[in-house]
Length: 337
View 1 (cartoon, rainbow, N blue to C red):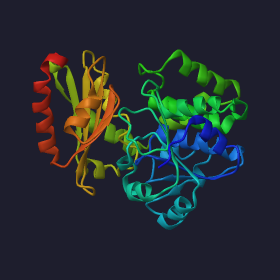
View 2 (view 1 turned 135 degrees about the vertical axis):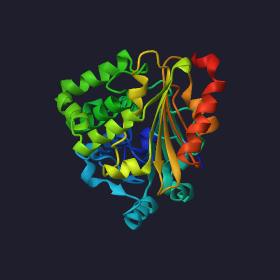
View 3 (view 1 turned 180 degrees about the vertical axis):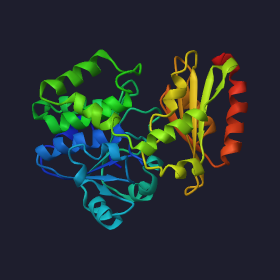
């Protein structure tokens, strides 16, 4: 595939195109926020834009402006495939390896449309005609803001774009807590507030919209919390039965891993969530300081991400996965104790 320069991309976007935007499987706040922020921006420039998600995303994100236009590949496969076949430009957001698109992997691999990757994760694959990758960015949503700036289009910034991008930045930085939240990040969100984005309302809609059952599931998760004190490590387990008991919905386990990391002295936290439908244990890893969970996830759990936040999976049982984890952290004693 012919590679593109930024000048080429800018030139291509000067005339109306059929554009498709694809985030990663199991879209989170940054995936949805960056996709819809880019969507609203490109629509203003006269493009015919479609956002196609591989599968569903949490209920607490379904208010973000533009969500009603999103196409779900797993349930609207025919229309999604038609959009992909007719596309002239294809943006992949918040992932950098095509397997991270889940059920869309084959469709994306076979699609010959020039791809533009915008992403902040480590070790990007070489599938895109143009790659905008920056591992020092806190979120892909902040990168969309800078992409608009590089395009000379910040005057097109409006409340819909700002609301979507604020949501992505807020969720991927754990409300501006993580180390990659910079002074520039705060200037970006200040711009959003200046143009009328209601940041308090966004926080309320994302974080204060819990179902009663989700709060009860949180209680189970905290009851299952284990601490390996001499290794400054904590982990949570949730079985399929425990999830089913409280009518688990997508997004209910979001952020639970951070409770382990909030314990004084803990440097490394994990959560193991059983998914019998897919035959896997879903894993989220978090750390503080220089302990690199990205490398750990890549080496041992078929995953990856960032130095302090990564994800992965295990094909073993929940019990075997936890046993593997406990044995693994013993070998990392020099990095954790």
